[in-house]
Image (cartoon, rainbow, N blue to C red):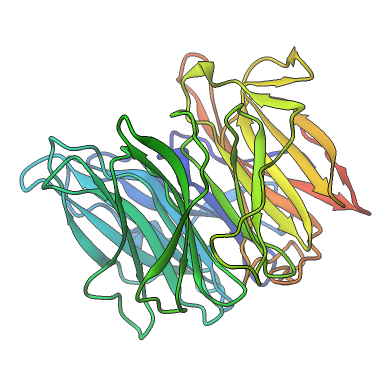
Length: 412
């Protein structure tokens, strides 16, 4: 299939634009849109399970920022539940007085095509002398309840705080749980819900002149009162903020990232082991992301049963040869071997893949979460022309056929 254009005009922060499917197999694309004076959350619906076009949904009720001179900080993040409801979470940053930020949430019913009521998760004070709030992420548990994580600057110093909250009991907690305080200016936390229905979080931690490290955190219950923190003991380059999380068929935990040499890599925690016991990095040494562009390199993980797929946004070198331009590269790890590496021959930016542990439907509408059996991997991305006059969002699928991959992708 060829790529499908979603939005012909400029849309919002690409960091967390996402795609999900409902029980009819229809894909929905979630993003924010820069529409002055008030930015808005936007959702587009595919015209079929294998879409040739997308249409924007319920613009009359789409939530916007509370007031002007504001922005969505780090984009929006979304996950779908077993009732075909999309849960959407974001951070709002305001530039005028009072200068503060809000963590906000709304739902969208993919069957009725209507938004729910916007909710404030938490109010976050913002000091303009500190670093920006950045990074929001959401995941759904086995009870269809949302769990969220984000970072925000502490107004009393130059540090950042990683916060967690959930909607267990029908409302958000009155006081968000502080996971850790760190000095990193761009934490980009990730979250998923594991096989024991506990929140699993990752982010980077940075103490100036002391250490840089990846942190993995596990809640002590579905509705946690605390998190167990474990530093992975790996340095990172400031271009590589993002991590991605997944759970395999056995309930083991995975974190995907770029290693210190900019190879796409992952680390694994066996479910039965103590939280402080993580395996060594598994890197595809044939692939090196080039950080010279100054962009934050993205990496995403998809697990299908026990098979691991890593997707990385690149300028990329493969076996020493520069492919040129920005590309999406993916590599597959099966039976303890890297079996393949492909570069999709399309100029693109900021790829986001579809994966969730509890609810992850494919084009047939079947739930491929928990056990796997995926037939395809969906992803969204955007393209910006060299003159920055044209920006498009696109939807694409990689088909998984008989343990191999078939790609038919049209060049721009």
